[in-house]
Image 1 (tube, rainbow, N blue to C red):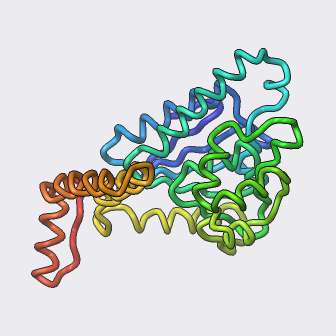
Image 2: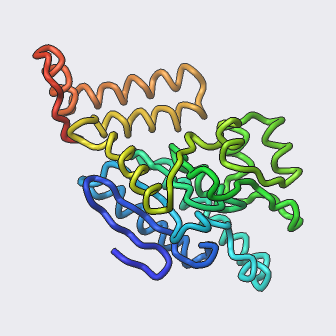
Length: 265
């Protein structure tokens, strides 16, 4: 599937979604609609086990919302634009498949908010900076940034980063827990190849992707629940896995002392 603003390519169990609006891959309502559709397409495709999100070219992953668009629109339009963007990123976050954001360039403002909805954020060393500088525009991070960042780094640190609006490199982002890993790569193609190699580690037959997806559901939903409710959710998801083909295969392979051949179901 190809769209002017989001490109969708699926191969080897990985759906690659590319934000495409050069030079900064800023998003509009139209791009968010395209991203929403791509997320749903990947969610419903049983052959897709990992979603890989990246920006076109090498300079930017995403620089956030299109400021020229926001400046020209009414407050009512901007409210519904932010509402839909939140719904799109929540859909990405709640999809029971691993989501990896490949930070191949600057990841700032709403671009970081998009990346925060992924499960893993892998960045190319020296390729760009990261941060939430919306305060310089007189607004706040309005696509989930205030909520997802505080859950990652804690209230005091999240407030400092957003109130100052400062930008920092990927290595500092890793030390803060915002970026999962930073890798060396000669260029953008080599970086994407390395991210794909890591993504393939979560694809059958080597990994039980259904279990990965339900671990994600337990973590994402359980984090917002009381402990007793989270434990109840965990039990229900475990029961679903007990009935899966992959659980039967995993147990049989362990007893036979052979590598499992998972199918993701």
